[in-house]
Every structure is written in C-alpha cells, then in structure tokens.
Length: 96
Image (cartoon, rainbow, N blue to C red; front, side, top):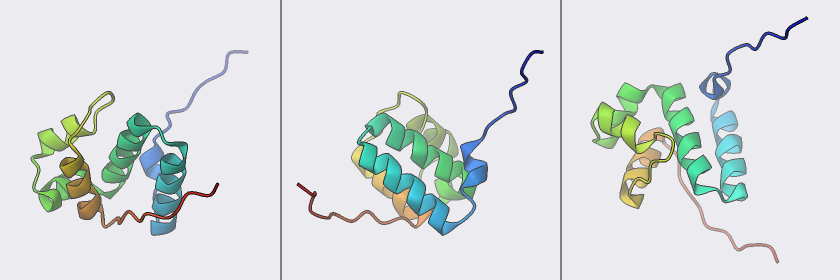
C-alpha cells in the first residue's frame, strides 16, 4: 500500500507569539544561518508577506528574494524584517 504525503506548511503552525518565539529560539540555538533566514520567512508568511514588506520598507518581491532558500540578505535587511515582525533579539552569555 503506497503512502500518501500530505503538504506541510510550517507557517500554519506559527499561530501564536509563543510558537513563533519558541521556533525562532530553537533555530537560533542550532546556529544555522540558512535555516534562520528560512525560519524568518516562515514567520513572515504566517503574518502576511504583504504587510511585513510594507512594515519593513521593502518591496514585496525584495522580501521574497531576501528570504528565499540560499539567499544571503544583508544584516540590516534581516533586522528590518525582524522589527516588522515585532521580534526582538537579545544577547545572553553562552553557557560553558
């Protein structure tokens, strides 16, 4: 009997501030910058790409391009998007 795969969209699971916070915290802890950009894209999709583009001052096409797999957006672009998402980054000492 063949298995049927159902579509999976991470953005559908990001339906609360707590879910977004936990998701991004886990991705940051892993330290994979490509995955972080992909995760920010999932959050932006969950919140509405058009609104995030408007709030960040980026064009919608530019936002999609910046968050596309393999993209290497400038740090200031990432910060603009994070602010538009209402997400703050905080530094804490690493545990040794």
